[in-house]
Image (cartoon, rainbow, N blue to C red; front, side, top):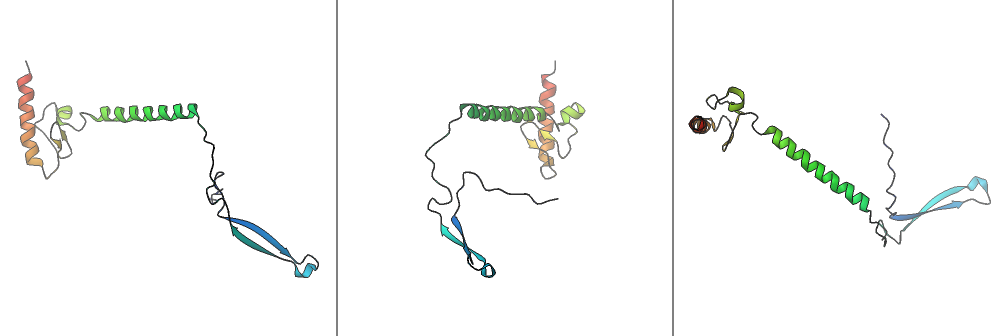
Length: 131
């Protein structure tokens, strides 16, 4: 893979001005070059007084933000109810580590006993709501 070429940013100025000094103009055997660097008067980022206002660009940025919010919400909605024993088995009785219980959160090996008690309460509430 070939190395990436990097070009300086077009709005970025130079930190130093570069001047090439050529020697040996009269005698070709004494020809040499030297480079002299002097601090740039405008600095690395020259001040610009003009600001470009692009209403079309701002509208595109806002549309991208709205699309990102919609995608994030859709992902959230798609995951609701996943990893639930109710979705898998039809009841809360058979919980496993990795399940997600409503009003409890994720079931881990550390909180498994508390999760079993909470699952029993959820199952009791679910059965009492049935006609």
